[in-house]
Each structure stands twice: as structure tokens, then as C-alpha cells.
Image (cartoon, rainbow, N blue to C red; front, side, top):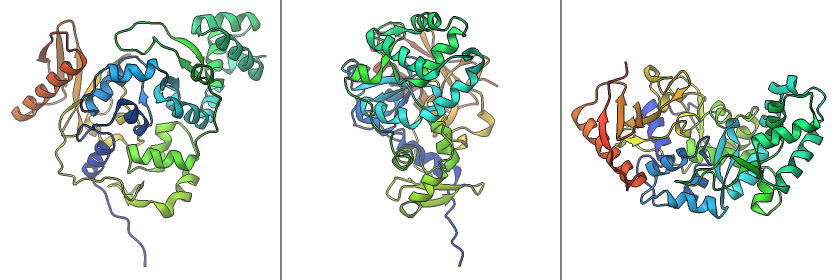
Length: 364
């Protein structure tokens, strides 16, 4: 007898993912606990992690995230997809080694600028430099360029970033503070040695808890690694399997929430590059096909907002207003709910500022 996996509709996947992402209802968990549960927050710029948690946590204030960064229980470090993520200190020491193969592959894109460079020696020199004194990328380029004057300085600095677990030290990353990117190693900043890489099987389980149900390709898109199929196969006896509407096999934790597809999903304002939109090979569980690619134009990336759980438009804060630009006409109840959520977000993130809430021209 052939076993047939249950099919999960796009809407069912949407509600399950929103629940794991703390976006169906706001969670009472602490900022640090949320960062751990979500396996990090995209943090290429300073503000996105704060807006990400404002959408997800009940009672959140920016200080609730600045505190863990200031006391070094959270750090900003390159991990998934070669981008800066904000992780707990513990995760930074295990997840960075996990994705190191992807960082090693990244160096290949800069080989032309690294002719004649011994990468192991480069890593040793760079480590000594940043652990003696935290350095900016400019300072790192100049120091490494003195060792290899014929190499491309930018390629040297990128190679150092790929070879070493470099963290951005505070005050960079603190809410309301301004500072250039200054780097040292995670081990030096945290005062403890590197740890073994997280086991692939453990990473799969954590990914499913935060982003499932998901396929092997979904997870590989999230972490930037390849050949994760073996880990899923080892875990298969412990997991449930489903199919999406296209027949793709999905894996999930047996006890993970999979809400009714008709569960209400309130509007949410997210930061640019929120992991919700970037952590699956098939993004249709959150991004309707008609809206694919509409959160960026040329080199400009916009912050998305959700209506009924799906990408519905973009938003931005101008001098005196929060401007909301939907991709289509909102119903009167949807417009009221979006306005209410916008007011709440402004109160959380900018309690001392007065912003109007405006609806801009509908983006075609």
C-alpha cells in the first residue's frame, strides 16, 4: 500500500509559518528568547531587528534588545546567506562554524584579487589585528594591504571576514546610537573559545521550529548550505511529512503548531529583508506570485507589511509621516486594521515623536 502524504495548502503553510514566526499573535517571550527561537534576525542594518521584534513581541521596547547587545549576550555577525544576523552569544559560537563551508565558497568569488595570498596566514594576521584592537574594515584593508601590496585590498578584507567569525562591536547596533562598523572576533568579544559547529540535525530541527513545514531546498535557501538532504533523511523517522500544492515534500515537527487555515492573521509591519520573506525556496506561502519582487526597485529596498498574512504593500517613515503604499485596494476594515497596527508600531518604536499616518499612491 502506498502512503500518501497530506497536502498543505498555501494558506495552511502561511498560517503555520506565521505562528512559528510569532506573527499570528504577539508573544510574551523576552527579546533574547525570541532571537534564539527565530535562530537569529537579519541585521544588515541597525534598525531591522528592532522592527522585527516590535511586530512579534508583546511589551517590546527597543531597550529590550539594546540591553542584550550591550551586555554581550547577543551579537551581530555574518552567518546565513553571507549577511549580518543578530544572534544570541551561544548561537553565534555554533551557527557560524555550521555555515563556514558557505563562507569558504564565498572567497572563490574574490580569487582574482587574492593571487599569491596564503589564506591561513591571512586569517592568523587578521585575528591578531582585530584581537589586539578592534578594527574598521578600512583599517583591516590597509593593514592587510601592507602585507600583500599586490592583492586587492577589498578582497583581502572580505577574505578575513569569511575566514574569521568577526562580530560588530557595540555601540554599533544599539538603538538610538550611531557608530561605524568595528570588528573583533566572537571569541575575543565574548571572552570564551570557539565551540564545535551545531550538528546539522539540530539545525534542521531548529529551522523547522521557526520556519516549518519546509522542504530540504527551503532550509538550504535559509542557511546557504548545500547537501542537507542527509540530515533530513536521518531525522525522517522523527518527523511528519506533507506535500505542498505542487507536490513538493515538506517536513515538520510532530508537535509544531499548524493552525486552521482560516485563523485570523492581523496586519504586521516588518523591516526590510525580514527573514520571513527570505527563508524558503518557495516564498508563495507569504508572497503572492503577483507581488514577487515588489519590495525593491533598483537599489532601493522597502519595508513590507502583511494583510491577512500575506505581503500586501510597503511602508516607510519620512520626515513627518509613516507612508503606507499597498499593492492593491484595501477594504475599509483592512485599511482600519492597518492604520491601527501602524499607530501601535509608531508608539512602540517612536514614542517621543509625532508622525502622521498616510496612505500613498497604490503601487501598480
